[in-house]
Image (cartoon, rainbow, N blue to C red; front, side):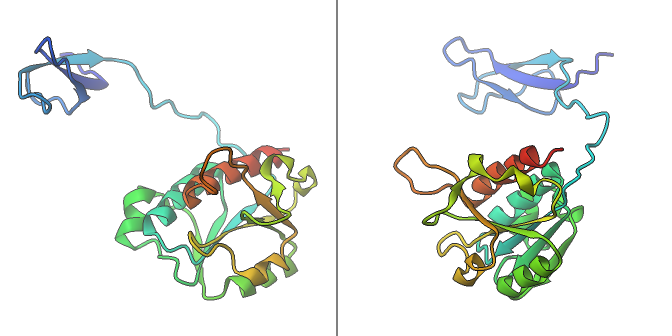
Length: 213
């Protein structure tokens, strides 16, 4: 019996030909676009390749979420953090915890694997980590901020605390005085900034690139 890894359905109507993925349950299903009959298309293509060895990161990176208001953004950050090898996430202020339904919806299980802790003050957390020898890197659109691509590579090998701020108000102003570096992502369109989870994803992987050795 043929056991395909992937099953797609394609509409048989010549003017439609809508194609969509679906669980294989019978020889045909109705097209969700036009209601016509469809045919199954089998594929043995495997797109879930596994990495044979897990990377060993020399630089420890922790993440501080300073009053992130959207649970969906928090969940997305958890998922990206898992992929980027983040050691810990600190949730400060109003940032929703991992058991929030919105966090779970976008984290897709990553919230169960990334260690996290609660902090009621992002400023006090930055002081604590700075005293412990961490480089405090703030991701924020601010005057004098360094473009991410110019981030000082001398941070390699030094523990990092990456601070990401509120979607509207940004980083707590008192954190800037504690930061070793403030970095920003250049914008070339009409918008002044990216969604916080998107900006975080760009930054965390750039940090991994800079600190890979």
